[in-house]
Length: 408
Image 1 (tube, rainbow, N blue to C red):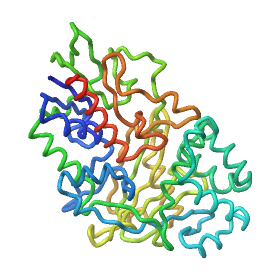
Image 2: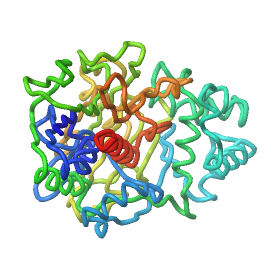
Image 3: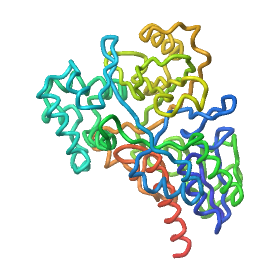
Image 4: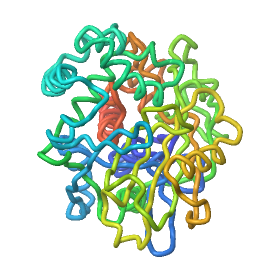
C-alpha cells in the first residue's frame, strides 16, 4: 500500500518507522531537515535543540523507541532545578528550606501548595477538563496564592487566554514536575542532544521510505478512492500537521484545534545568570516567560560556553521586534552587557502547541476522520499536555490503526 505521511516531526517519523517495512511510504516535510520541534542547531562541534527539551522517567514509550534504535545507552538522568525571578532576585524553589524562605507566599499557602503537588499525580485530570485553572486553584489554595504564584505562570504561557485554560492542563503540569528529590527533579537528556534521536530515526526511516524535504503539503484532494498529494496518488494519508493547515481534506471547520506559537531565543554567554538554576520562571511581565539555563542542567564543559533559552509564547503572528525586545530586557534585567552575548539564535513556530482551554477534551480529534488519518499534538496521547512521549505514542497508535485497516 502507498502511504503518504505529512510532517517529519517525531510523530511522523515514528509512524514511518513502524510502517516502512511493509508499505511504500513517502514522508513530506516542509523544512530542509527532519525533527519538527525537536530540530537542533549545529554549533561548532556540538548540537543543541532549537527549543529546550528534556524527558521524564515515565516516558516509557519514548524510552522504548530509544532502545529499539540502540541509543538508550546515551540517556542520562540529570538534576533539574527550578526557581522564580521576582523583584530582581532569583528564588530557588527546590529544597524544603528554599521553599520555606520564599517570601511571596505565606506559610499556609505553601502547605496547601505542597499538598496539592503531592496529590496531583493521583488526580483524575479528565474530571477537571471543564474547570478553569484559576477557579480550581482559588478554590484549593486561595486567591492570594493564585495571584502571587500561578497567575504569572499562566500569563507567561497563555497570555490573554489564561482565564480560559483548563485545570486539567495545570494539574497535569504539576504532576509531571512532581518527581522531585531533596534538591531537584530528575530529568532525562540524551548525551549529545536529542538530535541523536532524530538522526537515528531519520537513518532508519530513510532506508525504508522516501523522505521529501523542503516539500510542504498544504492541500490534498480525493480522487477515485485515492488521495492526490502533489500529483501522486496514495491509498492512505497520515497528517501530523495542525488539521486547519490542510485544505481539501474534508474536515469540517468545527474540528479545528486552537493553537499558540512559541518563540525561543538561544543565547551563548560566558556567565551564569540564574544562580545555578535550570528553569527560572518570571514573576513580573517580560517579553519571555521563563529563562532556561541549559548548562545549569547539562554540564557546561560539553559546550565550552553557557547556553540560555528565553521562552516566549504568542497567539496569531509573532510580535514585531520580539527578538530585540527579548535581548534588551534580558540584558537589563539580569545585568548582562550586550557585548557579552557571543551569539544568539531565534526559533519561531506559530503552531508550537494547542491551547488547552476548558472542555478541550471534546475537541480532540480521532485518529481517522473521513478516510484521513490524523495524529499529532492534537491527539489523545498529548492530552492534557504535549510531550515527546505523547508524540511517539500518537505515531505508534496511528501506524497500528493503518496496519490493521490494511489487514482487515
